[in-house]
Image (cartoon, rainbow, N blue to C red; front, side, top):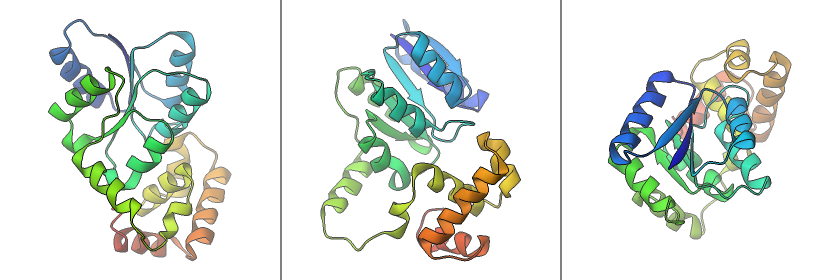
Length: 207
């Protein structure tokens, strides 16, 4: 099995690789630290498995996922993220992910997910199954579902107390671009400032 691991935290990458090599001794892996590098590797080589973090500089994991699927790449792609399932699981599955694993519950679950997707199946955790079941019912409209994936990412970083310039550096974007995303978030959620963004995130259980 030839696997591409994309995460901007070296310790996390090493942990993922070690965990998978313990379970799959014959696995050959390569690591990248950004979405841009992940796209390059996807274009240059053929992979049996791709593991993507969501929050990465330049292009986030969802961007890379959508790029790969739009390019016709059928490789199993697992999303592994610090974000809880209720925030991004449905977004990533709709975008073509083979499965979503929260880093909080990684370990045996990651190995189980890899085993499943390598058989051509989807990995859906019990938590995601519950979320999917709830989404089938008639629920009131959730305003933040109107946000794009990047807007959602920027909102979570603002709520974490990061400035526009900090976010620009972290995501490898210009300050003006981040400011535009911030304004779109305020407009779509009918908010006025960062303090209201923070309150919205906490009141809606996104933090």
